[in-house]
Each structure stands twice: as structure tokens, then as C-alpha cells.
Amino acid sequence: MSGATPEVLVLRGAGGEPVDLARTLLSHGVASLPPNVVAGDGSSLETVLPAGGRAWAVRVAAGDAVTEARVTFPAERPSGRDHAAVLAQVRHMLRLDDDLTPFYEVAAADETLAWAAAGAGRLVRSPTVFEDVVKTICTTNCTWAATERMVGAIVGVLGTPAEGAPDRRAFPAPEAMAEAGEDFYRDEARAGYRGAYLRELAAGVAEGRLDLEALADPALPDAEAAERLLALPGVGPYATAHVMMLLGRYRRLVLDSWTRPTYRRLAGRPRVTDKGIERAFRRYREYAGLAFWLMLTRDWVATEEP
Image (cartoon, rainbow, N blue to C red; front, side):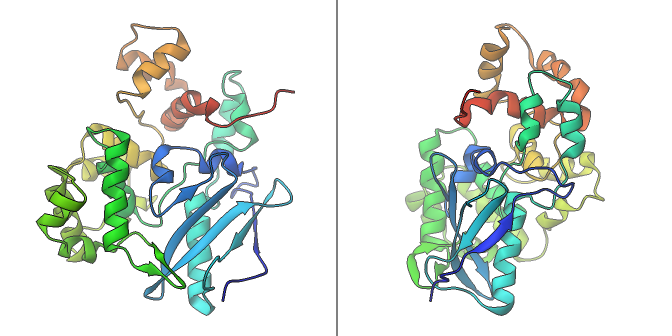
């Protein structure tokens, strides 16, 4: 049965810094792809997470206090280790174990980004690096509608149904994606050239030849993580920068067909080059990419004027 009493999640980072739930849930577009459903105002996240060989529907919503969120299970409630595993994944997705205080200290000295210290800057990530890489590949060289179609099919056809809510599914395991035939990627997901890349990637992970989760190891240098990403099928410079951000490696700027013109418009610099953009954020060093992203997305969350 679903849990009547919600779990209380304290919205504080590892350094004691505040966490703005809405700005976290609305931090980037990929965060809203299936199995995630994000409320338009950033007040809640519904998703399906795996644990114990099964899948569980879970909802995270704003609490009574701004420093709290409520975690509930709309359908079946997991117990024991499965329950603990699901809650650990929620914390992981919201990056509650990250410490952003060093970034906030730098941002506080910049009048254009001082607002971020109120709890912005956490980019929702998936339970696994594999899921983030797959979703990122599905954003390359296509419209957002095509991305939603591809990821929707991958989850809707290959994912494990949630307990008590079979219409909802978790993101599929690498084995399920590797076993799916070419016809699925061609006719149902309509992934185009990406289909072969996705099958190859999934097979590498499923067979143990490729360890994507190792990319999240903080002991791994950024340069090596980027090199490994660039070696993956279907991952180029844009996808590498995007996944690096989701890994908490914030030095690289995500430069693409949306971020470039958006920056030029906001900065009033119509002819600035990529190198010029990078120079503008160099003072943020290892947080340059995060500072750039926050500048571009500040107006994604409605705020009340004082």
C-alpha cells in the first residue's frame, strides 16, 4: 500500500547551504525526461526508481517549510533495504550530499550571480551515469520533441513497471536496452543514427566492458573523465560538457545552439565567440560552466520581486 505518512527530506547541502527545490527541479531540461515528471512551477518531482529487482513510484514535493521536502509513494511502498535504496537515490538525484559553499563564496562577489547563493546550482541527475549519458545522446542534433519521443519509447517499452502502478516505468537497465532489436530503435524510438550508438553503449555496460559509473569517482581527474566520455559512441564535445556538468564537474561550458545565442542576448554581445564566452567565466575556475548555466537559466523559475 502507499505510504500515508510522508518522509521528510531536509533541503540542506553537505556544507549546510540551502537547497532551493524549485531551482533544482527546473535546473535543466533533461531533468524532465521520463521517467521523471516535474511540475511546471518546480514544486514536485514524480519518478520511478529501481530497487530490489522491482520499480517503485515516488513523489518529492515541497514541504511546509522551505527547508524541507516530502517524499511519498503514490502506489506501493517499498520496505527494508528497498525503501532505503529508493531514498538514497532521491538524495543522489537532488545532489544533497554535494557541497556548493565554495561556489557560493565566489558567486557572492559577483552582482550578476549573487542570487544563486540562496540555493540555486544543483543540477538534477539520474540515479546512474548510464541514464544521463543515454538521455544526453538523445538530445544531440534534434528537436526537443524528438528527444522526448526517443526517451519516452525507451522508458515506456523497455522499462520495468512500477509496483502498483504498471502504467509508470523506471528507466531500463543496460541489459534491456542491449537486448532490444534494431527495429525497436528504428521504428518505435525512431532514434535514427543514434540507435546503433545506444545499443553499443548499453551492450558495453551490460557486458562489463564499460564502467560509466566510475566517471562519478571524485578521484578521477576531470581530463580523464572527459577523455573517456569523448571515446563513447555518439558522444561529442557538447554531450561531454553536458554529462560533465551532471557529474558535478563544472569547469566546461555547455556551448550549443541554445546557449550561445542566449548568452549573446543576455550579455548584449552579439558577436562574441566561444573563446570570448569562456574568458568571461574564467574567474569561476572549476565552477565556470555552472556559473555560465545559471546566468542563462535564472528566469526559468518565477520569483517574487521584493
